Amino acid sequence: MRTCTSASRHLDEPLAGTAATARTWLLIEQPGPWGARALTSSHLDPALGRALESAAQATGVRIALIRRPGRHADHGTPTERHVYAAHTTAGGVWLRAARVSDPARLLDLDLAALGRGDPRSFDEVLRGRPHTQGPLALVCTNGRRDRCCALLGRPLAAELASSGVDGVWEVTHLGGHRFSPTVLVLPYGYAYGRAEAHAVKEVLQGVREGRVVTEGCRGSSAWERPGQAAELAVRTAAGEHAAGVLKVVRTDGAAPRWDVTVAHDDGRLWRVVVAQGNSSPPRPESCGAALGSPARMDVVSVRRWDGTADRRAG
Image (cartoon, rainbow, N blue to C red):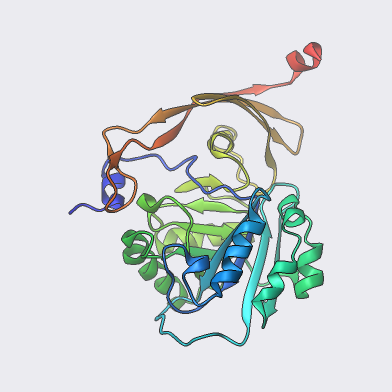
């Protein structure tokens, strides 16, 4: 039977504008097996998982579990866990790290502040510090959500780790099973689909050099889906690869059509028209699901703009 990934690849489904949305990521190390809803179906205390899910609602924070690549034998509760927080909005990007022995301390975090880009509670509650050991590569491997994530993601994570790439973790869920292997790279928050080891290494080298690799990119998690597609389109049109210099500053309209304004640090502006279409022919959005027509973000136009019309109107 054809997998959701093979169907998506065969139909050449576009990647741009398909990334998960999160201004801030909170990542908690949890070894061992994961269930489909990992925060409440792993060795993490399910009551804690439910409390974290509730606390994160409407904050802009997305919480996920991570583990080291390799065999996932059931070793019980670790004595100490890695915890990371990353804010991905251009102009305020940061990545913090901590280690905790009692994960219940996470409930003392000010998630609303983290979502706004304020890391102080992370540092105060968890004794967090800036992560200075290079970017993180998070590979989705949760086969309980979709078998493609395990069949394709786990070998990718293992290959990256065995070849000496630092900062590689398996992660519970990045969305878009049909684009497996899917990878999120922090701190900038760009997601990639149909990833291969050599491409991920190039992406990580780009992060170390302060540039964004757009090939295979699904978009930045800092923006909603129309903004993701618009920002990538501006990067292509302008030949701009520098990280952190483009920001989605305005989105007008609603599905199925948006006018997105993208600003550069140097003052340049672009207006990007993005239309929502339905993918055809129908295909499964995940393995075992009924055939459907997932929404796609199509860039209709990209043009430089000086903002004059809006200033006159104001």
